[in-house]
Image 1 (cartoon, rainbow, N blue to C red):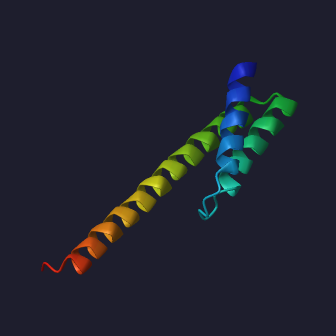
Image 2 (tube, rainbow, N blue to C red):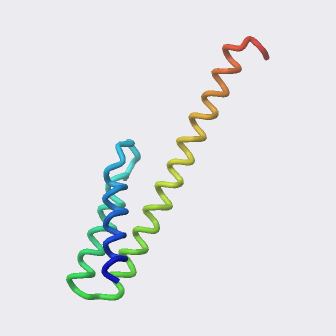
Length: 88
């Protein structure tokens, strides 16, 4: 159980350290770390579950944002490639 908490904190720390300007990019990992820390202090199972759930939501949010950023760059690259290639 302790190693699972440590893995959650490491995941949160890594997501906090990513230097990409994503809206709420630091809020979600910080909430996950805070909820898990409070749950460990209070030894509350519901809070532990909420901390892990927040970590899961955070990971999903970052995956969604990465996909959106990738789509924007790929579509932009294709647009400018067609614009400057001279072909219609």
